[in-house]
Length: 454
Length: 90
Image (cartoon, rainbow over all chains, first blue to last red; front, side, top):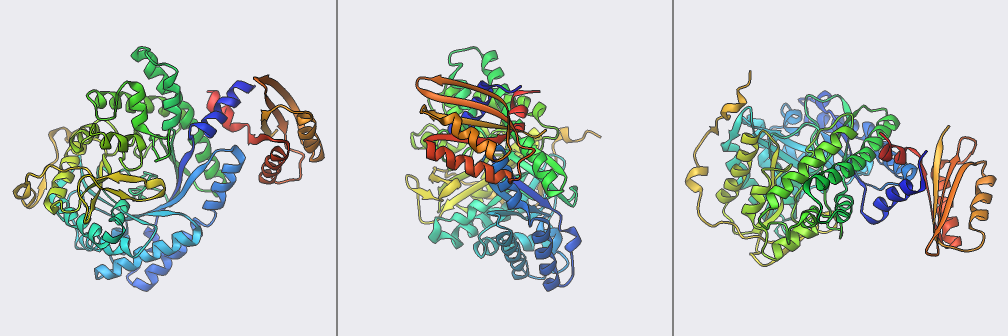
């Protein structure tokens, strides 16, 4: 039977170490909403989302009560809108109405974000894909809750450089349109290589076409729990270090598994996956960078950071995989800058540069995340940064992403404020040498040799 | 049987157990096990209870126990057993 010590340990994790379930994300397929009439399409999309997700928030709150574990976000992901709107949308403005419908539906069911204003263009763009991508700045600016993502490459297809170049322009345009708000719309826009179909985390969540009609995905958190566990093994060897991370990740993930199963049962919707990611927040003690420091670095970004992060990411997966029946999504350590106080401190101290972050993304999930750069960064430079990150994903057969915020009207040394879970970010310097001639080449980068496994 | 764990943590005072047990009895909640210690003047108790017979909604019990805790000056948490089982047992 459970003893006092075990109960105290769990409650300590929740109360003092910020253990929580970061998100229950309900994936909803909108494929059955497709209609050639835009008005009808919007109606069907609204109906489907508000019907399937009507009990989502209530269920999340009930589970929170039952187990005494905070469930921070309840969210929705839908089928990439480029696929849904293809038949009905004849212009950018038509697509924007779909974003507004998503926003309204999300508000009606009480979720804070809805993902899936997305296009999958890893090999080529259809006319419709391009239309959706070009509508992103307006779509994000005229909505509150909609998140957008674009998959620009994959290990199997290579990198669509035409789309990479276009996204350089779109990210800049998104920044300009929300310039009076610290270019905050860019927080809701992410580009991927090897985007997963079942990711529960925003801004990149969408409901892949290979998924069922509706599915419950859960993202756990717990950097604070790992950090606290590691304070107890200071100076120990790598075996002890790794075992401690593994055991802690197991415990954290079990909570996610329990919540996912319970949500699935209560909603009557199948359980999809648990995402094992260590997701930080700006709260003190809820930081992935602090774990790296606890492993033995003065600041995240110091020499040894990539190795420490590789170790952390691997042990989190090893511990988490056994704790859940289905693992998916991004599953690794997130290293966003603005959402992690330790990362912000590292940037401010001059320990962490964009180049080091890029190296770190080779060994952990996701990529350059929530990074503010000077507003006058050239579009082609943004595209170059994206291309580098996509190449890392393509060659290493992993997901990589870029969520970057060109802070219009601001430069290095200043900071942008996003508020809440998104935190704030010091603006980081960007290598100012040009990549224009490279980015302006047409076409795509072919798939790497090791993708030919058939 | 639906087992629930109630934990009470806070500064020790007269009648903590009595008041918690009275609430449980009033609501047809059966106590299966109690363990309790005092660590550096702090009262620390865990109860395993059976909530099968109670007519009250689980969320309401959670809220009422929390309120009772505030009255006594301790923190009372009421959680389904599964969260601990999942975390500490393979």
